[in-house]
Image (cartoon, rainbow, N blue to C red; front, side, top):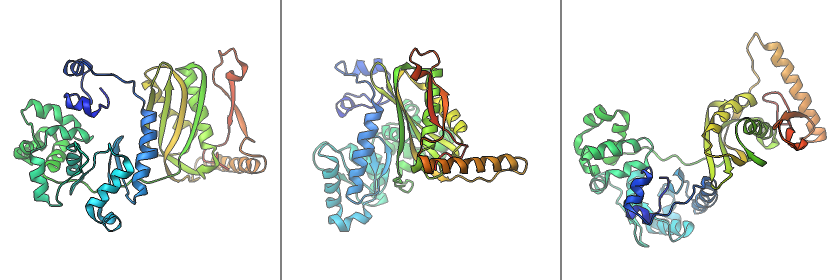
Length: 364
């Protein structure tokens, strides 16, 4: 099971549960095909922007869950109640808002909201510990580092965070390692500092496929998208740090995968190699493929090693020539032929023109 609604949670269904067990607990359960593209569009393009509209700097934890600090907003919205009211007006009446001294405590308070009134916990570590002691251990599912601890803790008979705290830090670390230490700290009212998201310019390239594609044809389409993305003038020579690879499937639903590179990249071949491995995760053939930049890295450098100094110098001069031609004749002045689907009956589908340029010099 993926994401579940509030009504399904009331019946005991949660994310990650086996389908047979979920249907046994809730026979009237309605299964909806996953649409991560629409979820990301609504969440990132509407909800997070609405929070920023009231002056908040949100930290998106996952789709449908975000945290923000209220310290700088109390003077604008006249106290904590005014901040909560502003957040509910921005997100809509169905949003569940909770307040607490830590992110984990605020999450527990938000999950207890069943009416139009928000739940707020006093900003005190002792009060937070007493409040969290009665909360179920299933709250650890909302943290990526501690999600895997819920099942073994339940089998050991640990039902609440207070019981988990009673085990002691040493026992948790000895049994579960670093995730155990994090879970113990969360149960004791400890949490890491909030990290607000960085709003950056978003670049995206997509291509509609005439026929359902998979395998080699889809890899060629991905190569075309990488070339087009690197040739966008809005990139301004910056490297790519994180990208979003998405597809619309043939039957129904969508697919979305976030790819973070180990180091900022600008070489088309290395970017394509990192992204092509994720195409094997597609659950069905794709009708369209899209590639977007989520986060940029620093501007690309042109420094090379001593042995390839001559080759790097030639590439640099060639890149300057391509940039000059594009500045005079437009971004489509320097192109190369890319074989996308050699078995297609349509000539335009066999070979596609894609922007050409040496690594690091694709943008004018």
